[in-house]
Length: 402
Image (cartoon, rainbow, N blue to C red; front, side, top):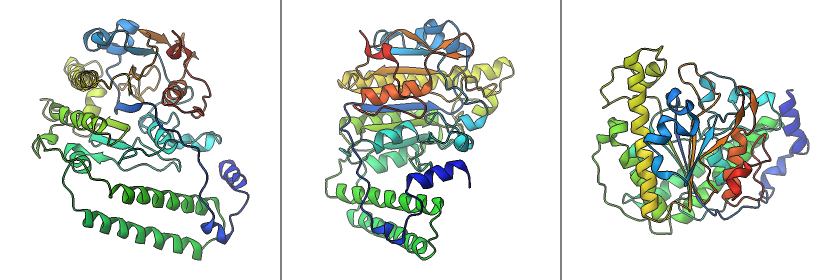
């Protein structure tokens, strides 16, 4: 038995008996979120020289986000010790723990920041969280059972979830069907129960899914807001030229209090469509110094960050900027080498005591602040009393000091 499984078993009081299925649900102290939180990610990261060179005076700070001076913080050189490199860093962008490293860190969990926020907060809105991929990419939202969360893919699906007219009877029938499936799975586990940690995890995961269904059913009683669709069905086939639609829907969701937590991800799949580039984002990321590939990376980055800027402007216009934490963060600092060190991280709004720049790395290896410290800071500003995040029990103090 692996040490990780042994610790799980010990924490659960050895083997769970058959009547554990009737045990009461765990008591969790949940907080009312003080802030909205919007996480934004680009799968393979930004073109490294444009955010690494010159620190807070880098190209992206001076040419795209200059108007937010005093209202945002550039996290200079931030990354997570021991993350390593490779594509395994992509799903770990907001977990600070790679899936293949879970057995190496027995006290840590591959749970993403959006799910930590959702899990520890009271559901005050129809959607406890939104995990939205503008276009398909790596799974980046992970629940407390270290399972990937299905994404709402594309603007059309996001609109249907949030603002389209729906058939309530059909929704109820879908929930009943899902309950039947979960009940069947639960019966199968009871019949074959031997008390392994895997079975206990599965049982707890099923309980978790039932809780989600309960919340969905409760919110069916509340009238869903209708918003007329303002974009065409085929626009999302060109992700970057049309992603203003995606951000507008997220903004409307915050405005109409349909969610307080949103994760917006730009995946690598077909991201270049409509941009005039033959190669995909991954191939351009491995630019090898070719000017045409670097140019493609620059144009993709600019399209992503310009739309983030437009979204931030909308938050200001609707007086939501100080009440919304927006964190743009990537799991890779240099896509050309799949390097997770010195990642791109820009923190906006949310009522933080913003600094132009916070130095997070001393030299090449000594971490002053880690990614986990940043995520803990987001949890604290959101109202969490326990703001620990994996290896971190400390925040970045500069964000809370005048």
